[in-house]
Image (cartoon, rainbow, N blue to C red; front, top):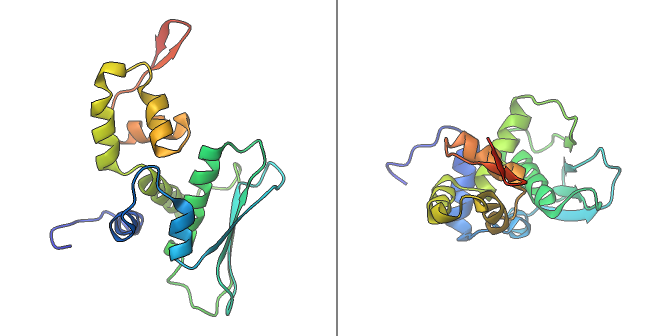
Amino acid sequence: MTGVYFSDEAEMFAHKAWKALDLTPPADVDMVARKLGIALHRQEFVPEIDGLYLRIPDCPPVIAINSSYVKPPGRQRFTAAHEIGHHLLSRGRLVSDRVFFLDGADTKKNAMETACDRFAALLLMPEDLIRRHFKELEANKENRVAILADRFGVSAWAVRRRLKELGLPYATYRFGRQYR
């Protein structure tokens, strides 16, 4: 990978996942977890919990995603990718250490949570693919965000946030009026 520069570990891990696993949109987070030896489970929890990551010595790491009807599939996929981020980004800890992260809407955004969100966004919506699909949809600006959300298996909110990060214009249309 000579000549490839990564701004942080989250970007490096996401790039390696796409290359090593030959991913295509929407990225198969279940396969990514499986290839990393992570047991990924879906379970209904209270609405305040999105997901959790648990690593205990001498046991396979576990990710549990809240499968409640109040958590749309795109949100569950982002949460799964976020929890995979915890697995990859906490690897520097001793093998004998117990590692536990419980994530929800009210989780305080520290450096680790921010890095895991970044990893999830990069894993689910790589910049080069977002830019390519965005350009392909030039003639369909009204539906571009919804189509991208469907193609990448994420929420429209996640797409709008990613487009904003990449400096790509987007518009929200409601009742015949355009909002920015």
